[in-house]
Length: 192
Image 1 (tube, rainbow, N blue to C red):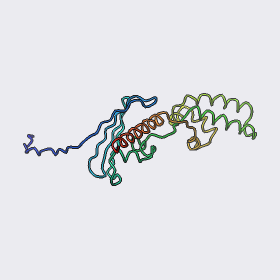
Image 2: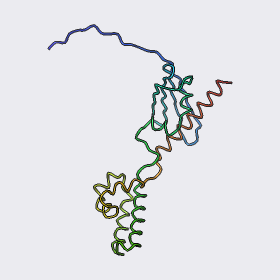
Image 3: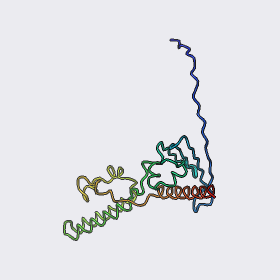
């Protein structure tokens, strides 16, 4: 079936001013590139790049009188990271922490006389295999029987605290701090 030739509607083009900053010298960080774009009063966008990764945030309701750089400096680091990556958490699952928790639980059960010496030794040994577990989901298939023995039917709720600091979160936190520091420096130089 032939298509009708409709006159093309012209594309709407908006022009905005983007400020690019390159930051070097931040301790233990590669150069950081920041693009700041003030789109309209109370609307702005920031893109932060470091070592091949980029994070972008858009705010359509910034505080009156602040540009996007000033607004970014006023925000809490945890809020910014949540805006950059909603799935990122300051802590992450740890097979090592889970193995330790299982060993502690087995010892408590043994001291209370709820399990015998041989069973405790067996469970303690099995707990070592948990150290290599990459996630709670992995445990459902590979170690669900052990987890059920130790923590009961809904064992996954009792493993929520088997975590360690998330290095990706700490890395992004250092980047955000460096960007805020550089932006404040820029603002002070502009004011002087």
